[in-house]
Image (cartoon, rainbow, N blue to C red; front, top):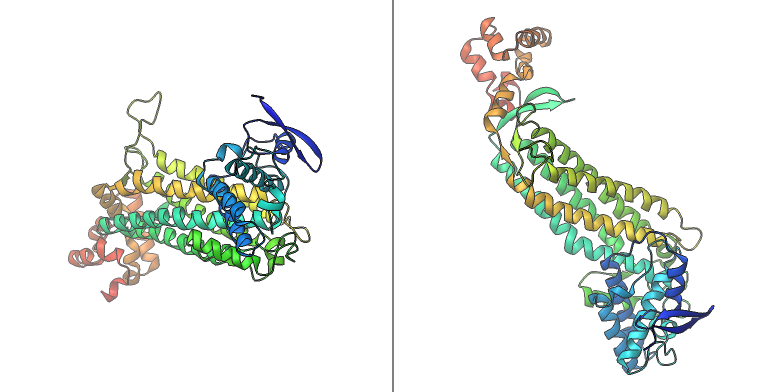
Length: 468
């Protein structure tokens, strides 16, 4: 059997591996774009297959595509969705800005697999044509951004949001467990008034909950699909209502609330929904990095740092220092956050390149957005299962810091005045003793009153000393 075959496109002949399902346009793009070795996410390829199947069903229902041919296209597109043909998607992420090469990669793979299902030989365009049949009623310009939205919505709904909810719940559970663990707060990395470890962890849970809300708020815009706009929004070569029918089919097959974009010109000129979604992911990444860094500080030591909490030990921390254990999960989360923030900059710049009637940086948007969603979801799951759920409080260490913070004097200020309280604070720092001892030594208040005013749990609840 020959190792290659000849396929043709509008520019002429191309040599293609005999076993390949892709054709001439894909082979041409392989030669043109040997740039990064990066490939599109599995979720994006699956979305392309799902969209191609939906279009074939609609074309058959409208009487534009022979039913037997349509059924074979649907079956072949289903194999793309399922991942059976992933090895045929060989193109680099960095390619033509519309994504035409990858849309044609999908069209050629589905066409040649359909030919095979119908009993023909690969490359027989008279039997199944990648443009005339598989791409019927479509353009790369509406298919590619539709695939971005379908993939991103699905990955957010099925992977990212559940992972984030699990992380929020883990922080909430730890907040409850640490509700009575008093400690010193810190502002500017300096001692501050008392709080509880539970309050601190409740703040972390709220960061994640706000992140969930921000990501969810992007979904209605991702739900708007430009399919049916074909070349630039007019819908040339697509039957009336094609986009609405395809969107309805996608609702049925995915269970997600997709709609045809109310203004397809906007939906094809701009990638604002992707930019918005990336912005929500960036904000979440910033919050997760803050949390991860806090945990690294709180667990620092164990003998020379804060050592207020213990993170689960997951692996040896050093190739030279025996017994050392590092906060590796938090460090991994930080690295994910850094990449997501960088991807957001890429997506913002790419989003600006919607010159006139089409954005011409869609492939890098697809890659960066879907990678950000995927790694954020994975990081959230790892953070939850390998770190947050297993965090333990060093209760006595926390209590010692709460007693030693000179800012306990803040509770005395309403009674003795700010200036007098500052003098007492300086004396406590100079002698390196708790403020409680200074108050007793100088008989600022009766001992029982000092005990009442400086009750650590009460201070953590806030309020004014004189009103309690």
